[in-house]
Length: 48
Image (cartoon, rainbow, N blue to C red):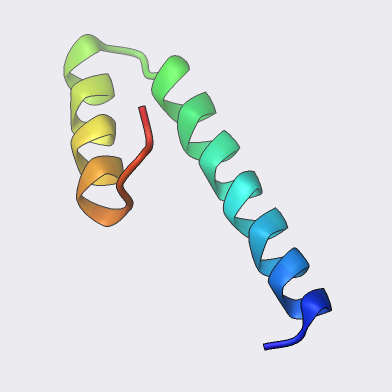
């Protein structure tokens, strides 16, 4: 993988991480927040 592709992939990961964090922060109920956190942790380690 070349440098440009690595940089692009890193930006996509950062954008997705921010979107997940925003969704968790804006969850309407604590149970929804917990559910989103569980999903995020099962898919990617290192999120919240």
